[in-house]
Length: 270
Image (tube, rainbow, N blue to C red; front, top):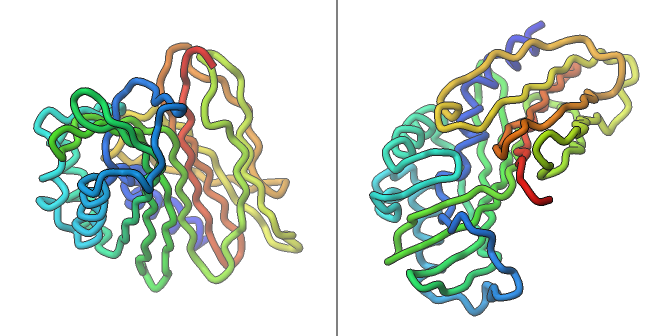
């Protein structure tokens, strides 16, 4: 039962680490990037590469002011965040979890009339010891960005994947979930344990949440159930209007816990 209690309580505090990975990515225009016109990372301006490096360094050092200097006062985000709510969220996150490391890779970029559009992937890793148990975080976030005068003015999330493990033998979990669906479309979510369970019991749960600015700082409770198969298998239906959702699974076996979260985007015109 100890593992169950840990799973329920730690999802609350680590959810911010799950969903604030965007905090150090560069921001992009909300219009779709024309990949045919995008240039390779090797040809990117030195100033763009420098901004990415400096934001990663400031975030790894938990320097909120150092990160925010690259965010415009008029900053907007696809999830409804502002510069002020970003500051509050990062301050809370780093107070609770001071051992996070950030690394951003530039995927593509292109000049626009007002500055630069870019697409990046940010990787976040970290560990934390709670009640003698070590939690390990691995997260990735793909974002589109718009930068003007070396400041982020807009950011849109393309994809988001996060994984937290704990214990000596956490389940190896494979996730099957589309990255985006049409409004009202039915979709499947599978979280499959890869190794044989043998005589182990498997507990698990699925959590579906709308992506909102308030959601970054609220923490739902997860109720685990005894599973009769090697994972969780759910069928859902997307909302009828374009939006984004966080789909999470928590799986517990003897010796470890795995918590995974993926963003599902609901978009028109797929």
